[in-house]
Each structure stands twice: as C-alpha cells, then as structure tokens.
Image (tube, rainbow, N blue to C red; front, side, top):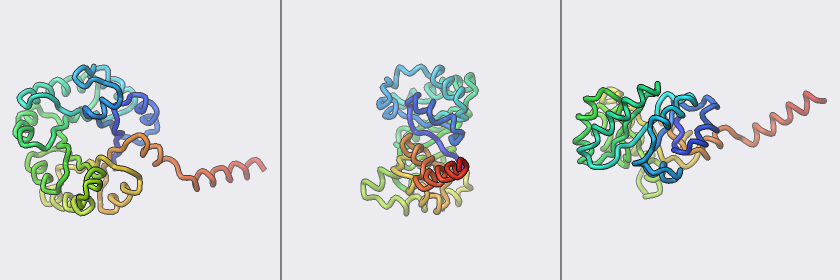
Amino acid sequence: MDLYIDTADVSAWQELMPTGLFHGITTNPLLAHRAGLSYPDIDWPTLMGQAADLGAKELHCQVVGPEEGFADWAGERYDQGRQAGLRVVIKVPLTEPAIRVVPEIKALDGPILMTACYSAKQMFVASALGADYIAPYFGRMLEMGLPAYEALAQMLAIGELAGGKTRILVASLRDTRQMALLAEQGHDCFTIAPNIARDLMNDRNTIAAAAEFEEAARA
C-alpha cells in the first residue's frame, strides 16, 4: 500500500509528510496554480530538495508545453531529482500526441506515469507503453456520470493480463469511503488531497475512546 499527497502546497507537505504515512508527492500545473505557483517558473531543484528533506521518496511532475519538448523537459527533471536524492516520476497526459512521445521519454530510463485517465481502455495504452503508473481521475469520472467503479475494476483485470507492470495510482478522490471501496476491489495505491489525508487520521469514536483512556488513567 502506497499513499501520496496530491498538492503543490509546500505548507501541506510540511504538515503531513512528517506523519510517515506518505510515500511521495504528486503535482501538476493545476495544483501548482492553486498553490499560487507559476508552473513554468517553478524552481524545481529547490522544490525537490524540500520534498526529499521531508521524507518523500518520489515526486511526480507533469510535462508541459509543446510535445516535441517533453523529452528535454523530462530529462532535466530526472537529473534534478537524482541530485536531490529523489525518484522523479514524469507524468504524461493520455492524449495521442503525448503518447507518441513516450518512447523518447522512456529512453531516458526514468519512471513514467500516464495521467488524466477516464476510461478502462487507456489501461491498454499505459501497459503497452510500459508505463510505471497510470492515474485514473476517479472522482471526476463519478461526477461526469461515468461507471468509475466498474472501469477501475476492469483496469485491474487488464493490468493483471499485461503482467502487472503498470501500477494504478488512483487520483481525484473525494473521501476516505471511496478509498475503502476501491481497496476492496484490490487497489493499493492512492494520491489524496490534504483534507482527505487529515480525515484519514481522525475518527470521532477513536478520539472519544482515547479521551476515555486518559480520564481513566488520571482517576
């Protein structure tokens, strides 16, 4: 089981990474915008150093710009990650022009995640490309009226037939209940927003029981 924090907000990293619950951090241009960052101007070496210092094993970064520049962009991030002592995973959207660039990125010998997945059929693409991860946008799928639970079960089956080399990193989750239902299917890799991470660590019945224990200890 691996959990990731899905945010580019460093203050959230500082709050949540020390819990020891999270394997790494996932980012994208939208998350950077929400955190007040200009994606093209990000100081990646500094950001990677902060992530590594907080105990992250991986940082997921998404390619931007014209597709012909993806490989160069990815190469820079891989090099910066190695210098920071961090495994950088390059996120590539599942569009045809981007898919065509994946072999060039793979030649750089770094991990790849295929992102913005909305359909089980895209698992065939990620598996055939030898991607390390694929990220289905589960919450968005549900909100669009798509059969999200069925699609993610199918993705597990496709991945197993393909040899299990592409791991499903479930993204766009809305609550911990969705995580539990997907774990029941067999999913074991999730990236979650800070509010879900906080909810994961809190249960009002557990809090009440702990208070009872303390009261008994003082009696």
